[in-house]
Amino acid sequence: MSPNPLFDPAKGRLIAVSNRTAIDPNARAGGLAVALWDSLAETKGTWVGWSGKLRDFAGSKLRETTDDGVKFTLTDITKEQYEGFYLGYANSVLWPLLHNRLDLAVFDNHYFKAYAEINLKFANIIASKANEDDFIWVHDYHFFLLAHDLRAANVTSKIGFFLHIPFPAPEIFRALPEHDIIGRALCDYDVIGLQTENDVRNFIRFLIEDFGGEPINPEQVRVEGRSITIRHCPIGMNGPEFAQTARCEVADQAVAKLNRFLGKRQLIIGVDRMDYSKGLPQRFEAVGRLFDNHPETHGAVSFTQIAPPSRSIVDEYAQLREQLDQLSGRINGDYGDLDWIPIRYLARSYTREEIAGLYRLSDVCLVTPLQDGMNLVAKEFIAAQDPEDPGVLILSQFAGAAEQMQDAIIVNPHATDEVAQAIKQALEMPLSERKKRWEALYQNVCDEDIKWWRDQFFAPLKS
Ligand code: ADQ
Image (cartoon, rainbow, N blue to C red; front, side, top):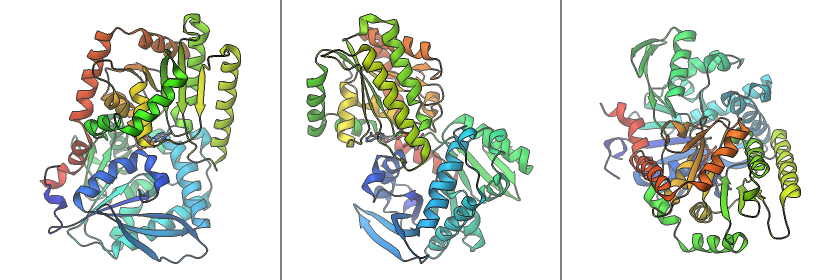
């Protein structure tokens, strides 16, 4: 990675902040963890976050440790804070609202109190460490208020914020009882990075309509007496490195294992955290429709969905699990045979190497979220393919990745027949077309990679 003066320890450190850090092996499956680790390791930065532990009283004993060149400053939180901040405000209010699922949001004013408390707690930890020359890089919807709290604690460092999930239309965001407090707090950041151009349009409109923001140029707005930069920075990944991972020994073993089950059948794969935003029931319905409409696929095609539960404590996830069990049970009951299971649904986690191998073996990957900030699975699938015999990506128009990956087959995940037809098209696609689409997609994955993403975010600070 090229030297970047922003990360020169002599000039100032990078302090990244996110709720879960990659010190916790369970959090390493998340897109955020994968993306951040590289940047911090290469720049000797510090990662501030929750330790993953709960304690009985509200002390702030910090755990400081170093792993693979990345320093970690971790704090415990109390059970009440975990329930109000994490399960409550973050997972049951902000997550559904920002994914356009107002119907699932649970508005409870105790939640916001805990959310504000945790933001302040983190602000105090960072304020005790940050120097004026440091850059504080805050990640995701858990910490909307952090810059505001840091400014109140007289922190003068530059502070940036990257939102990994979508920013909805202001009409939706206004349903949040605290939208005004959060909107004002966001004005204390210097740079705000968002995944898509659509998110940028939504956010700038929110600043203009609700806070009298005045656009200075396409990415700067004067608001609340300050000027903030709002940047379109789609998150990327390291394509060639992932391509290698897909060919490692562990990946080969996973491929061999799955091949024993698969035989000569074509393989469709889905890899997601189990979450209602990922459109899994709609995807299962579409695969069922493929079998309804195309008897020639019976015994010739298998669909494997990997979806480990990530927030299984919250009711919606338990319901989703039940729904998927029912759907796969019905489809397998209708179509399965002694030697063929049409849908395999594996509710467990696999290593990055195993997943990479499974992508490599697959003929089709279904990435059909109803709403998604970016979706790194789409990019990983492309990176893992054999250039001489690549598989086909079917991508939802509502994944942030669709803005960059127009050479995938783009679908509306709600349109069951359309998705079923897209699967059929993908299964039958001639090699020349598969190669042409894949080459364009892989080029984009490599051009707009993780380093490019970081540079996009930091570019305004260099001037
Ligand atoms: P996520 O919603 O977690 O991230 P995504 O971008 O798809 O979604 O990242 C998932 C990551 O987890 C990928 O690296 C994938 O390989 C891994 N993963 C998924 N299922 C797995 C499994 N069963 N076993 C092992 N690994 C698995 C949020 C936003 C996204 C955004 C990212 C990054 O919701 O829209 O792309 O942050 O900004």
